[in-house]
Length: 228
Image 1 (tube, helix red, strand yellow):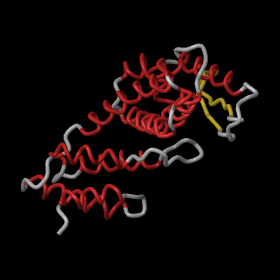
Image 2: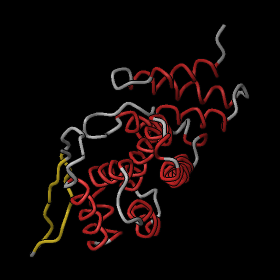
Image 3: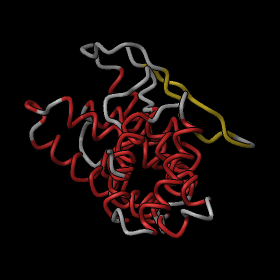
Image 4: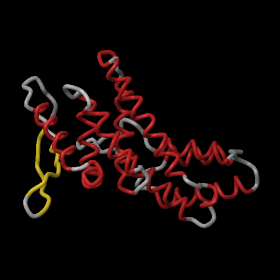
């Protein structure tokens, strides 16, 4: 007979947009029963939830839809009166972990770009998706947005491809948030580096539209650049 732990793991692994409502309700019920009656450990279960965000599931815009499922799933657990006590500070815990991995992976890829695996790149971009969404929700500290995230990507003479992809994700999903805390000058610097990168004739990626905010008289407006 399957254990509660096994069933919870299966729910996480099979979660999708199509079965979300039913699966989320099932998970919350079993989570409450399992932890209340000592069948499962709270930390183990919380660690498994992170697997909802699966690296490699990217759309043309570099958006990873499984990261949206994770954010929604955590929010529903925290909002449920029966399970909220089992999920204290999940957003904070996961966002901190994603940031740690993001900074480390950026340095790892830079240090050994030639032999970097697609799995490492996918993990890095998945964390970029998560960070952008958590920044919008207020779970990333302002000083981290202002002083660390963008700087870690552009603090070099030229951008590497994984850094370009990360900037696209951050601006696509959280451009207004990053501009508000990082400032227009930082955004303009990022845009300038992206423009220089895409002007290189050797770039052979498929076209992807990127929309970046910039200052105009009387308000804000969007600029555009493209992958070529």
